[in-house]
Every structure is written in C-alpha cells, then in structure tokens.
Length: 281
Ligand code: PEP
Ligand code: MN
Image 1 (cartoon, rainbow, N blue to C red):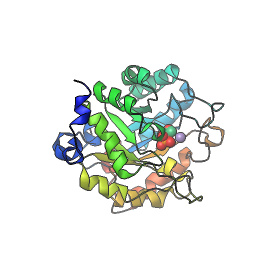
Image 2 (cartoon, helix red, strand yellow):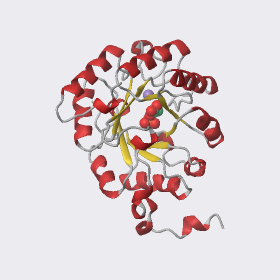
Image 3 (cartoon, rainbow, N blue to C red):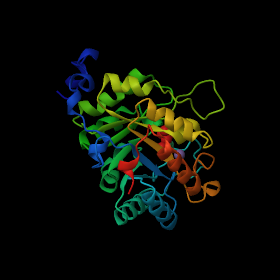
Image 4 (cartoon, rainbow, N blue to C red):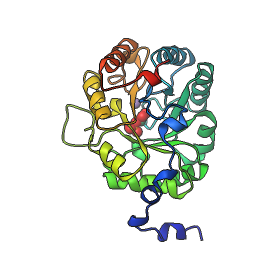
C-alpha cells in the first residue's frame, strides 16, 4: 500500500543518510567538474524577453553556468507581481538554450510540476513550500533535478525531513539551499545560518547552495558573506542580478546590477582560497 512507505521508516533509516552514495551532485547535474564552485545567478523574476536575454549574455561572460528567474512567484501580497507563468517559462527556456545556459525556476503547485520540468533543468522549491508535502512527493515521483530551499522557520532536521520526502518518492537529484531563517535581527532580511552548511555536509552527501540575496536582502555585504559561505563548504552560491534593479518588479532592493555582480566575481576570483576558474567561460 502506498501509505506504508511513509510508516515504516524511522529516523535512523533515512535514505539521505543510509544511502549517501546514491545522490547526484550539483556539478553532475550541470555537467561541470566536481571541484567547480557553482554560480547560479539571474533576476528574481523573468520580466520580459529582452531584459532576460541581456542578463543571460552578461552572466555567461562572467562564468555563470546556471541562470535563475521566477515565472511563478510566491509573493507575500496578492497585489504584487505574480510572474509571467507559462510565458515566463518559455522566455527562460528559449534564452537559456540560445546561450547554452542551464536553468532553475520555482514550481509552486503540484499541477505545474510537469510543465515546469519541460522548461527548466532544475526545479526550485521555495522557502514557503518546504513543507508542502504533496508538492515534494510529486517532484519526487517526477525524478526531475530539484533544489529545495530551507523554510524560513525550519530547523535543519525539518529541512532534511523535507528532502527525505523527495528521496522516498524516487528522486536522487536533490540539491539543498540555505536561504536564511527568521530571527529577531533586522539588519538583514533573514539570518544566514552558516552552520547549516557543514552540518548538511556531515550528515548527507547532498550539494548545498547558499542563496545570498534572500538571506541578506541587501547587496552591500554579499562579497564577505559569499566568501564565508564558500569557506564553510558551500557547493554553490545563488545571487539575484537584474539589468535595472531599481525598477525590478520584485525584490528590487536586493538584486545586484551587472556592474556590481562583475565586481563581486572579480573580487572572488582574487581570493586565493576560491577557485572559480572551472565555472569561467
Ligand atoms: C526565490 O528564490 O525567488 C524566492 C522566492 O526565494 P525564497 O523561497 O527563498 O524566499
Ligand atoms: Mn527574489
């Protein structure tokens, strides 16, 4: 019986822990050398074809392998821009194919898993959906590569349990993403839990990406925090970049301009402890 598979597992037998060697690394999914530091970047939302292509060309020149852009946006207010939906997926897919980039975009709903999988290389489960178990099961059954973001009030244990739902349904292409948790601190949008990175690396074999933009909600401290995340063992970093951040339709305060992103990459390249060479063009 279908429901039995959820009953017979106890914490000690979790697939993520018991079958570590089974899981694909982010670099495998993106066809990159296993020691490459993965850069995921792109706008918060896909807004139109020309702006998205402008960013894609720029990111490609700056060593980015995987472009992001939301087509289904989980906005706090229902009156805010909700994304271009299927039209956004088409723009993402067409532009990325034209410029030989891999793609990641969020899926919000079980009904869209197939559609989004047809347009993107990696599905993103956002923080608000980390405990949407029906969505996790559907993505598990799809077998499509997925990046699961930590919920903003989720413990690391809950985060791992959520990933387990995907694994238990047959998907071994799971990437985790630390994107900050809610604390009393107000200087940043969320508090990046840096200790999550080595704990995930110790307890599982999954790759972990740090989303600097949603963790911090500001761009002036991205560089030192990117270095900290990489030093703690992150396999990749994700950053929002927009051709005209001030006029972006979502997350306008935290998206980097192209100049700012270029400077960030140069500064990371100058750090002798960070090797971005593999991800460069
Ligand atoms: C996003 O990456 O576009 C996003 C909405 O992030 P989060 O789910 O982490 O808030
Ligand atoms: Mn965003």
